[in-house]
Length: 281
Ligand code: SF4
Ligand code: SF4
Ligand code: FES
Image (cartoon, rainbow, N blue to C red):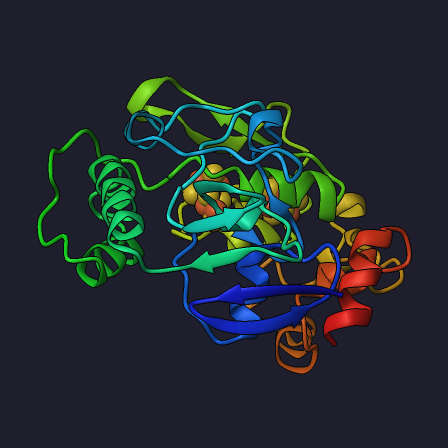
């Protein structure tokens, strides 16, 4: 166990828990967009690793640079840490809690940097509701400078989810500059599970329409139900022309399962998913 202080209160947290998770458990709100508890932090960036603290400078925030895994860190989860005689403002999603840390989540400098971060995100994606909401909460009332109209903040969660959780690897980034966004790779190998949509913080990715059209054009003996493709039910053909929203199989899975169906399907072959379900459900 690790003993840390958050906002002047002592907490005992489990080993290998990041500060964002520790704060969530303690009901302390920290804004975050590019972290998911099952996927983790997608940046995969050595200089932003759990072993090396990094002081996040204004310049890093405003530029929103593409990191080692091709995604962009949202930089909203910044916190202030004093540890081992040093002082940092760094990302809570990617910093493991260690005994002796003194953490503050709302210092004026942390809030100022979060404002810079939300301005950079909102300028790139001015129509995204969650960005409007977070901007308002941080006291930013207008899109500071408009760069584009792309709803993808390039966090990479959908790409990591499809690759590491669903184990299909159907997505990658495409396009350049302000038009860069996550999209289906060619040739399309998406199985239509829809998990990418559930982890996307902005609702920017939803390959369902594309993939259902592709399935509809398949010959009769290849029109497998997508839950059969996910290996949740035995071999079964779709008799409903892939109108899943009208299908009893689809509705039952959505209503009665406590988690997304593809997690149940992958629990036997993906240890990361199995561990997550054991610990959380
Ligand atoms: S819907 Fe397609 S792209 Fe999205 S996670 Fe499932 S397989 Fe991957
Ligand atoms: S589509 Fe969504 S999850 Fe994927 S990179 Fe863009 S914002 Fe992130
Ligand atoms: S949640 Fe985005 S950088 Fe931590």
